[in-house]
Amino acid sequence: MAATDGCSHLDQIDADADARSAGCEDCEREGTRWVHLRRCTTCGHVGCCDSSPRRHATAHHQATGHPLIQSFEPGEDWLWCYVDELAFEIEALADSPSHP
Ligand SMILES: [Zn+2]
Ligand SMILES: [Zn+2]
Ligand SMILES: [Zn+2]
Image 1 (cartoon, rainbow, N blue to C red):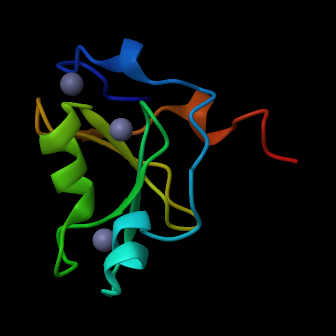
Image 2 (image 1 turned 45 degrees about the vertical axis):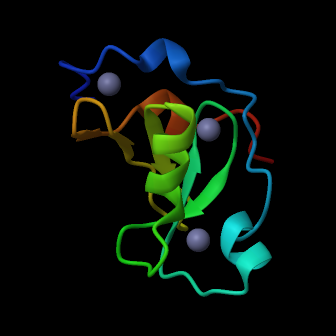
Image 3 (image 1 turned 60 degrees about the vertical axis):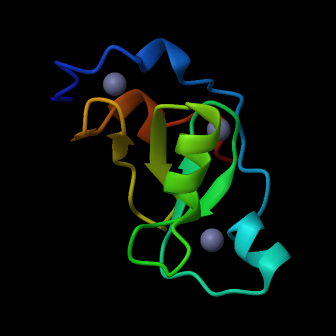
């Protein structure tokens, strides 16, 4: 089951926060490359992971305070809370009705 114990930010997940871009929007603007993509569950910002040179997902959290990201990689549904430093999955999100 979803191990959400300890994260108090689940109310900041917006089910309508669709990804705003197909790639890291900051890398695309700056002309840099990313390794993996993460989507902000609050606003839909797509940023790159901490293995990427620019770490835009973390930069987005620091700039906005948005606490939760979800993996934007195919087949990955896990979430990460920056505030609680907690990774977990939510089955209801993995099975989103917005998928065709
Ligand atoms: Zn949290
Ligand atoms: Zn980036
Ligand atoms: Zn955000």
